[in-house]
Image (cartoon, rainbow over the protein chains, first blue to last red):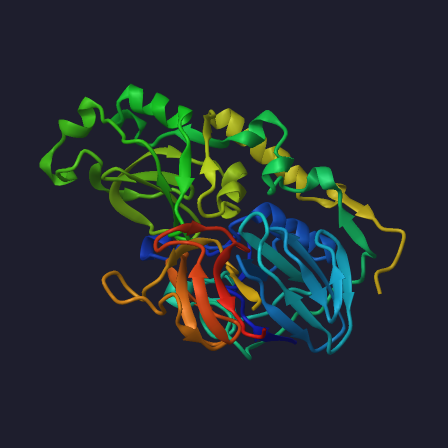
Length: 335
Length: 83
């Protein structure tokens, strides 16, 4: 059993694939905003990679373990201690009954993961353990973790030993680790409503810098940047679409959809609404959703145009990285 | 006199007042206790209290109302007394 001594800023239980099949009733998929780091954390502790684990945002929690556990932390870099000893991220850790894990604040990136062997066994709601905090579902008490809460843990599978994620297999969360070309800018596909933007605006989108507002959260990333111009399609439309050029008859919003509300670009992520009346001219494909989950306030983002084929290939590569091939056996024990 | 630095724990937007148009939590030169709220940082559409952390006199703010701040940035200086 896991006791929450301090909840951090907003820490939740998340699981993959998330809550599927209820979005038409307003329940988004939720799940980890950085699925890459999430899956590696689970693999480090011998869990299936989609097992329920904790996601912390900007400030991590303090936890007491009420049984011997194998755990691992991944995601945004932060200083973390087991009792009084600093411990590393991206590595299997052995914890003894009664020990306290104290997390600090994210130095780079925004979100991190704490996986425990056996998984977090909070009750599933509508088929998933993923938390949708705004609706108060998921977790132990419905929503983000609270002071004093106790979470049940599952039975651990037999130990896989002490493992570490190879540095090359980790997401490049720190800006200085983004050395490859495709890591500089976030992938974005055209559509579904790219035809509603003027071609100049499409070019402008891919050549401009977009600043992440502090007001961003798991619902969406609000961006500050240049103004959009619209095509004839956005003006010559039936009145039921709405008056503003960015208005469209309510339609389903894809995960990663970049909506334009008036002139405000908002990238819809894991807890976003299911539908609405604003156009979505671009969509961030699944392979780069982790970039959105790790975006810090005031970070400057750039986007690069990709095709469906590019996106599918990148997703397959990422899928391979989220496997045991990315783990290295450690020769020494961490006490 | 030694100055203690109040550092931000979070990135976000720093405000001197609880809401626009309301008076600031504290003024420069005001005496504060460790748990005195001296400002708020808005992040993820939530408002997080910034406390003085030490008792003393808030000598000066290092950031202004509405500034974008990163984590671990100096927000204010507090004179903690002693000679």
